[in-house]
Image 1: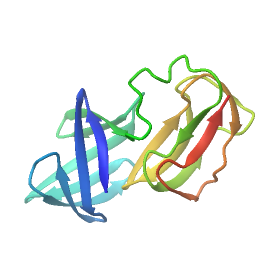
Image 2: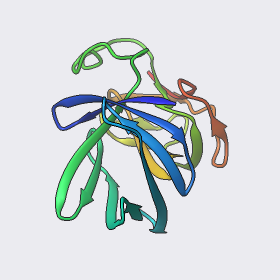
Image 3: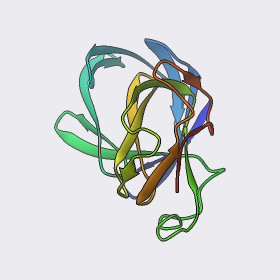
Image 4: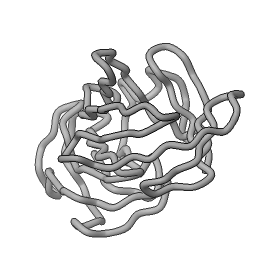
Amino acid sequence: MKYFIRIGEKDAVLELTSSGPACRFQFGGDPPREAEAVQAEPGVYSVLMEGRSYEARVEPGAAALVVVIDGRRFEIEIRDPRRYRGKDARHGAEGPQSVTAPMPGKVVRVIASAGSAVTAGQALLVVEAMKMQNELRAPKAGTVAAIPVREGDTVAAGAVLAIIE
């Protein structure tokens, strides 16, 4: 499965050819690599790659996931090219807006409820994908019209998770 990601200001393609604790992946035009990743505790992963051990701390940031490895901080945004309309395309948009799953995963927490008022950037729900938890946020201030998923639901990429009016 291919993922279009942004690390800092650089766009890249990450292709997973096998997933699970032992995964095989290719980053950009680099040769394929293998790694073993195990969740040590929530938000902390132990990664073994090419004979070296790494600790990766993952936490949701304002607009992307923040990953810290060996003291280096990376902001990683997973992009869905089917929905990409530019960095500021959704700001100031009018009418109902849908929050969709950026990739297949499982809903692990629903934070907002239908009828509640939200501000732009407020957390709505958390989806776990590739052993990482992604906090999905409101694209604009408004009212939650619907959240058609529940905790424990499995969702496909592009599935509507919330509608903000």
